[in-house]
Every structure is written in C-alpha cells, then in structure tokens.
Image 1: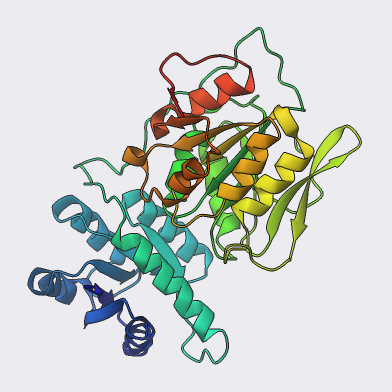
Image 2 (image 1 turned 120 degrees about the vertical axis):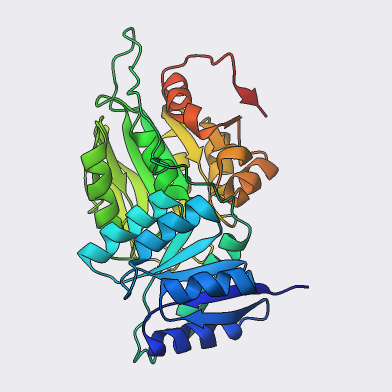
Length: 358
C-alpha cells in the first residue's frame, strides 16, 4: 500500500525534526520533505507532489495564511495547520480553516517528554483524514464563507424550552457548524454541540461564532440551563452531557475517559440526549472522520428523535455521517446549505418535500 506522503513546513528546525520523527514512525505515512518557509515549500510541492502538507502559521518571508490562500486558489491540496495555543494562534487557525485547511493540531512542545505517543496519534489521525478529504478550490475574492440568510421559525409555533437541537462533528466541522448556526434565528431551540477540538481552542471557536451568529454561542461551563436562542459547545477537555433538573434541561461536563478516542465525544452527548430528551430533540451529524456519534445517534432514534446527516457531496470527510447511516440511525441525508432549514422544519413538525429520506 502506498504511504501517505507529507511535506512539513515550519521555520523551526527542531519542530521540523520532531514532526518528521512522529510522522515517519507511522507505518502508513512518510515525510518526503521539510521546508523552512513557504517559498522553499512552493518549489518542493512542484517537484515532490505530496499528498498532505503540515503548515506553520508564523514564518519568515511569507506568512502561513498568505501562502495557504494562494495555494488553495492555484493548487488546492489537503493542509493540516500546526498552530500555537494562543489567542492569536486560535484566531489565525480558524481563518485558515475558512480558507480551506482541512484541520489543525496544536504545535508540539520541543521538550515534550510525556504524552508524545498520544500527540503522535493525534497528528497521524488528522493526516489520514486530510489525505481523503474533499478539498475545495478557493475562488478569487472568495474566502469560502457561506452566504447566510437567517431563517424564521413558523409563526404558528412558539419556541419551547423543551425543544432541543444536538450537533456532532469532527474534521471540517468548524466551518460546517458555522454554516448551520449562522442561518438560525435568535429564537431557535437551544443547541448542544460536540466538536472534536483540543483544549484551548473551543473558547475561541465559541466566541467567534457568537460574533457571527444571531444566536448566543458559548463554551459550556456545565450547570447551565439550556435556553432557546443559545448554543453550548463542549470544551476541548470535557464531555458535554444533557441532564434534566425538574422541568429544565441543563448541561453537565465530565472528565470521564475518552470515548472513540475523543473527549469531548459525540456519542457521549448523543446518548445523554437519548436518555433525557426523547422526541423533543433533533439530532444532526456533520462532516468528520471515524465513527463517533453513530451509536449515540442510533440510541437517539430509538428514543424517538429525528436524525439528520450531512450529505457526502458537502462533507470534507464523510466518515461520521456514513457510519451513522450504515447502522440505520439517520432519517434524512441533507446538503449542508439546506441543513438549518431542515432542522427548523423537524423541530416544529413540518415536512420537507425535497428531503432525501433513508
């Protein structure tokens, strides 16, 4: 089997060496080149034709974002960003995902002595996902931002605190979640979200969405009452669960072991919604690598919840929706651009004539 060929781009020789050792340790991938800046990388891409790039953000001669924007317009290919765990680092990372980067990892610590195996596994998983990702061409004067038109809840329906929307995603999910939430009205049902993301980035992700959306978006702190017009994102260090407190839904955080190698896990969130929400919820699974969420979505369906999956054509990676479909947990497969409308239709009992039913 042909190994996944990787080009590492980073201005630090020590980081290039560490990433090269981590990647070459994997049986199914190899580093075919390492470049200290984008100008050198540009020539190496032409001659080596790598399957995946890892790209640092702050580099000499050309900024990583400038390079990424040019690359995605002229020669689109899978890119995994290697980002510093800082406020600027997280903002730049989400901008990179807008421009078309498949995913990101936090920059490794040069003196890392423990946790190296887990860090290596994370990088390897993201490179594997990138190697099969759907990469889109970035049009001139276009940052791949989806135009939004805020939808309205049918007037005959009053928003109930019992209604819930629950969303799970992984690779490609930051942009997909944005494209869904930005179209929802300020009085939509409460939303719980599990997105695979490392600690330190989820707060910036939530703050960014809060600036863009009509609804209020926050990183969950646990113990919040789930309110209409609010979205609660699982923090990168904890599982997010739904609980019932009297007549109210509330959030709960858990430091329990990872599930499907993830914390937060989509399955953990979905299982809790199946247990406590029943027919009052709408389940949504978006783009992502792996099978996290499939078992939980099946439990939701058996509890009477209507489940939606993003279609293959609009997914960056179709893995998670495919697995949920395979176990029979999905009621409709929906293009991303129609997802917000379909969510509202199902939350309020409407029937979509154009739906693709399973």
